[in-house]
Image 1 (cartoon, rainbow, N blue to C red):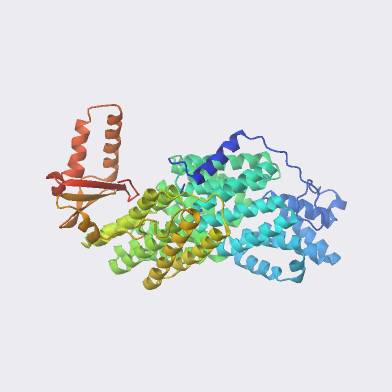
Image 2 (cartoon, helix red, strand yellow):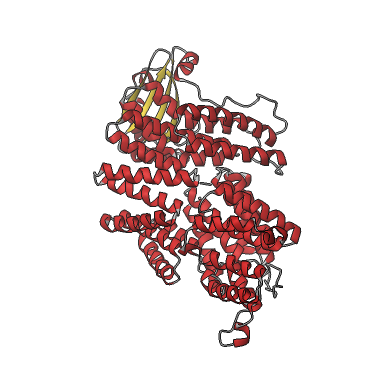
Length: 632
């Protein structure tokens, strides 16, 4: 699955944080489920009670109870026993309910693709087509399965499940469906919508006492904060999920929360604590045969080993995770492991093996339709091509990555999210900028910068309403069409086709913007495409110079543009030094210090190397760290 201006999406998440610490939880009483209901049971089976163990209805109710609390290991044997008993009685309806529950409870020991195929077949079964509760049960199972394969299928599953749940009055499942659709919105590149749906679902599960749902949505919101590099906030969500699970003795282990907690601890500089968390969770995953979580935990341990310098152990863990994920078609895990392996092999100088792993990772991420990681995998593959002097191929891959990022920015419906997403993927633009700069292509270098900075700046200046007050059928339809175009863009390698799709995406952006802000007149918005270098030069006066700063380590750059010429100047300092000096300079301004020495040092780094700027021309500065969007 990156989130200070108080946008509505940010407020939704902030509200969830506040409620987590202040609200009084309702007592959740589980009631005995009827044979035709998907409701949860308030009791468990006593293994020593032969009468209970021989009653499939009791077993099914208890299994549903555990399943609703995300406890597959406890539910699976109960479903298996109930399935056999219902089969012996000739009760096909409840036999199928138990079988679906068993498959989902054991899902990580088998192929998600095969489970999805089976569930799709059952949805065509006359019994399922005429029994709404059983159909809801199959759709729920398929929704949880398809998220590992194709989020577009998951969206269809949960939309129908939500509709049926509302008809049946299954409010808790309707809420869960809404939250899962929030996850889909995130994968579609629409984090604002994701925050609304997930935040609302979390509040609803709290009000209804749905502990399993709360844990799931706390984990997902935590992952959302992780994606925007807000690790301290993410940690609070993960720890709350773990605390809830610990308080409910029938709850399953919240692996995603443990994994997220470990990632957050690493990010904030606590690797030893992170390893302890991961080792503990890995032991539990293996004892419960949670193979998917085992693979994910191995990936995290591999990353941690790499960060602490144990490259051999890192490669061993990641190769194990990658091959397992490939075998069982866990595409997201495969893509993640392959990316990390490509990085390790590249850094070790084994470029051929690195390129093989990067190619496999890209294929996996494209198959699952993962917008956030396709650009990352395209970027590392481009870097490897460039290192092997295959510059044209590298340039094409960078452009493809930027097209995918731009398509995602088109559907990001608020400025802060827009800037955050672009900043989180700035490495693509930075590496591409440096590649074209080395080839002496100044117009190309300027275009790379403006593709990301121009769009985020345009959003900030346009000041459109961040989000609609209510989602209309029109906006939902437009967002669905937009998501389809984004998937096509992500999966095509044709430059011509990508240009056509980007043109269509631009049109959808304008239509979606008008749907969000009805008072906007057609054509009112700022230009979508960035200005070219020649267009910028035309509007500059003879005594003006535009300076575009690009900060990196160990080298930073300045793109110098005047009416007559344009070039890229290498600066005598890297990002860290410039940022440190700038922060100290601002601090002295605030405390009314002398600033003289800092001013001289910054002037020597940023201005003196530029003849046009140091000779008295009027100059306009734009700067960015790792090409992150920055104000004029």
